Length: 317
Image 1: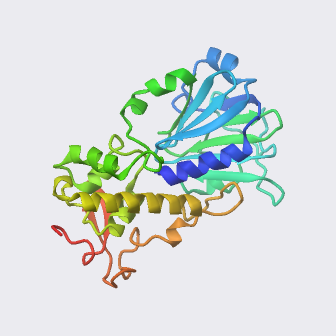
Image 2 (image 1 turned 135 degrees about the vertical axis):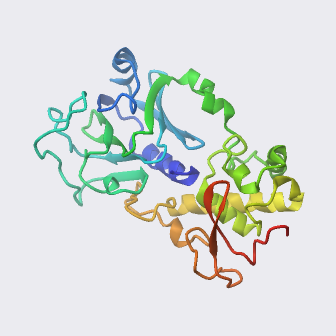
Image 3 (image 1 turned 30 degrees about the horizontal axis):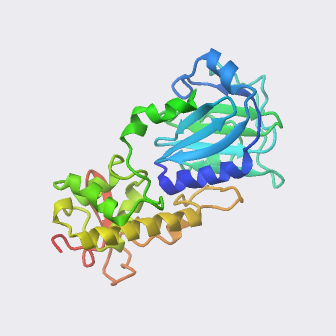
């Protein structure tokens, strides 16, 4: 699942590419992916222009001039891909979900501006639309934004901007870990409410801190020399302050490197995400710990595959 840095990277890229663009049409093949009333689409989406792209936790928010917002959750396998040229035969891609029988797709070329982010599949760099394409936004300048989702868990909802904070998820989600006013003291206080929970489970709990997933939990815990199964209540304040610093560091590094996707990711400048080249523990089982040289192992904590150095991250220390 895309985590905070991946969604932040998508947000930053789209802010460079679609602000001010007018939405000329939208086509969707699955009501689960685009659960919106035709009246709302016709009156508040078509003809509107994009004013801002925001992020809250792992959710993207595309604000429109009609005071409506497209709320986009990529879930497990979602992607957003922007292409600045017409790749779609509008007579072939039907709203009712039937696929075309002719080959109307145009493959990527060196002259196009292309940006993609989300789950790492060939849809990020291949011809579009493809079998995973669920929603297509066409702008008035003939550029397109594709929402692809293999497993159909993700969605794009159109709703009044004023109502976005009232979504159940938005009410429950915790503070953004990279906000300037989110201090180490507040970080520690929020975790201490989960005293009997493992620190990794607490890190993954979106109601504690927003946007942290498996990759960055493992990386931050390694950086702070904390075993992921350690109970929150057993950690001193000094460890929380160190974990706070390490988490912000790895999140900022990943955003700088374009996210963790190490296959088929293309950002707004046409560069692939590269954070995994700098990962210190995640998916490095069998390799030497870059700090002490001990072999990194993979265990299970909080129901998730978890990567640790057994020497640096000893349980109970």
